[in-house]
Length: 429
Image 1 (cartoon, rainbow, N blue to C red):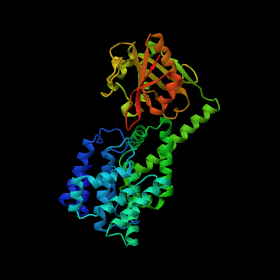
Image 2 (tube, rainbow, N blue to C red; image 1 turned 180 degrees about the horizontal axis):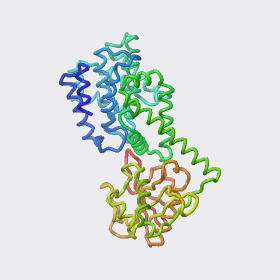
Image 3 (tube, rainbow, N blue to C red; image 1 turned 30 degrees about the vertical axis):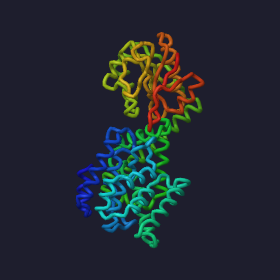
Image 4 (tube, helix red, strand yellow; image 1 turned 180 degrees about the vertical axis):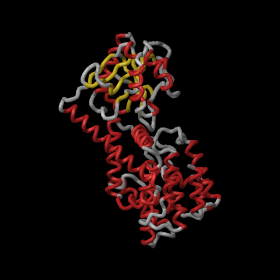
């Protein structure tokens, strides 16, 4: 992506060294703060570069007219619009972003070399606040008003102020379009999972929230979204609308499943699987395909998946449709804590004692979350662990889910993780 951006920079008169330095400085900053390509959150360096690329690529749309001077502001704001190195949640806090770009000596030097007004860059970043409504919009508008007062270029120029706000609206729409236009549906779904994981959403919200996201974009930002998509290459337009239609199709399937469950046309049957079944290649393949639907950080021991299914020390139960031989729509799996390489921050006092079983994150097919099948598999897993004389079970779960189990199951937090809020906990069996 860096080379593609460099090519567009040259085409748009941004070839001076200071702009190239900004690009490389941004990449170095994200990587050094743990927000690089390995960070499993929506707002990583890939997102920052994608927004920068598409903001320059789609500049010839006809809704907002850009001057050569405008492009340098658009470029700088796009590069740094989500950089919040001290984030405790994935969604960047615009005030933290503004504080960083105001205080960072190297960046201030580069902005001065580009002869750019920092206050205008702040306005553009503030206008990317999402959603642009309610208290978030009100707070952003108050700060924008102050930025306009602070700038000699905008203080008494209402027309220029409005133009900058239009530029910010353009950047805001590019912010929401770019990632989905730059890849096929598998990338779009991975982005949705990353967003859900980093924002601590329950899995049942992934598709529902994605559909609402696209509907709001296309209904409330119709003119700008249409103008931007119109000038993008055909393949990128296709990618975007394929993502929209695919999420809507999956949402329709989810609603159908939920209706069948509500009308009792569909039953979810937790099932303990025997070793003969677990050694069947077809069974292993079915489980592995469901396993791959999990967000990447929740795919434990991926390289040894088949071996673990066949391992007698490992507990496995499935969720089947209607009867114990029905279609598999989910599974619970786990084994001795010592079999797992967990995050290095975790210091489990029972590691090596042999008294703890680790439950991997529950895996369900899309559409079957939120129907209590996962809870039933988990309870069955605990019963199986009890029969094998384990004293404790550990696992990962959303922070609010663990809190709800503190009184009910005497759950205790072992290690908390931010920004994900997907924490490691223990219960006594």
